[in-house]
Length: 243
Image (cartoon, rainbow, N blue to C red; front, side, top):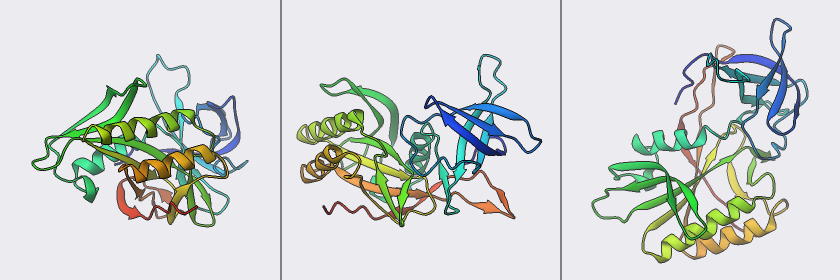
């Protein structure tokens, strides 16, 4: 998956009100960008850190710039736009790069389901031998010593999703939690028990109940010192559920 247009490099001044970020562009202009991320973005908002923005020419938009990527203090790249992982996951599934999910002929996004009135990120159907697969996608950018953690803030919504996935297993379908690792410094993924212990408990309960948990990393890369705009899922990452 590639960004449709080249990204614009800048320097982060600050993130505030959760969805806003002030950025200095190379010519010295200061702009306010939309920050499409509801989490804490822990370790992903270094002051004066290098960031990359996309720009929309849609006149209806109040903020034309969107914060897409950041270079962390350790020099890794991370995608902070949580609107991207669903598209990354869908592209990878349809291209056959998520090996556990090969063989489905149909992929539908944002399907309503469950007693708690959720929307599944991707519903896979049409496999010759396997039941439908309900796939919930989560973006992982919190890194500590090479380990990726989810979530980066307490998430009652994420807890609800785990309960809904367990219910689908009871109904006889596949239920999948797919961690999209959008951070080049992450080698393994595990629940962030130090941030949301209840989510960690539910995640292990879901695994025991038959929910499939997997993680795939995006190849955020640079070419000749400039960002290529590539963010394709390509490589499985181990998930560690040990307490």
